[in-house]
Image (cartoon, rainbow, N blue to C red):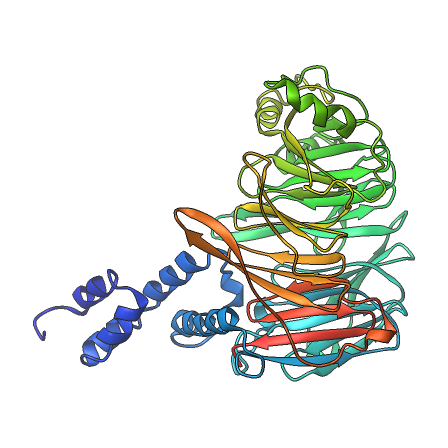
Length: 494
């Protein structure tokens, strides 16, 4: 062993699984050092959790190794779900006012002395914002800002953007936790309903562009200091209902007029360079039956004729599906529509500047309805390669995006499903019946299936003061349910 260089031991360790690395590290000090090389554990982490974000990894030696083992511990405890052993429940009570928004502030806010814990930010009807240490159940700071319409955390956790009913968007800087102050603010012409970010790679760095969706249908693109860069005109949409951005930087917005406008960030940069204020690059007119849709099976007409026209759009929501670029799900009432704009997007990019046909060339893919047509869709989320839908009857339905068929359904809730959180490994649902249910994605006979695991238990949520859980959100090791002015926090990995 004294003859071989250290790089040879590292090369051997690169072929080993995490469990084998743990065994080999006990052979001698040379192998012990080789098994702790950072790039090995980085590769294992990214292979196991494809949504790993480097900003969530703490500083110091062996950080990827510590990250891997902390998350394995959390996954194991989430799999078992034993109250008091695998997770702890806490109740957070802020002002005597209902919670309107809640989000996690991760990245640099992670405290590795208390593994994998970000800050929890909650906004209340009375205009108060509170930041919590979810693990200890302690309030870190409180700020009075006024009634909140929307809230978003910068992807690098460098600030909290808050949209107010007054039309003001305010950036609260993440300085010392007990001395957070307004860094900048800007007044817009109407109420901001959605704040989000577009990402763009510049070498090894990522550049972020802020967008603010206004209730008039316009979308304002800004720098981090809220200085406007351009405006997307959405006057053909009506009052904004839903605004979503895909990982490939496609912006989709829908309004009360029944249309959907889609912009490509790749084309928008060219528009702004030429001084244009562009309408949607692609428009989906849902108010009429498209003439150019090719129907392969006559029985699909049964779905298409009642589905497309005259659907009330006041409560519709959009969801980009990660399985394919340009695949958009539209949920309204008891209906789900799947739209594939990928081919139209390619045509727009090729013919930019010389040709645009905003009302033509879109394609409707297998329009589907939920299994129980009498139940309205309350929430939906892409998870595990499927689209999971929660309805007013308390059902969870798993739709195969490729075929539009329902492949699984669950009746674990006795009341309407009001919120869903999902990723590639787990799904958490909440309901008006005061329950949070945990599911896991499993591989079985070369198929991915959803397995119902357990209901999170612990503590009272004061049932008489509100109508059950209305939202659920999760981070790496924490599940949070919101019910009125009460926040229930379930922490794993403690």
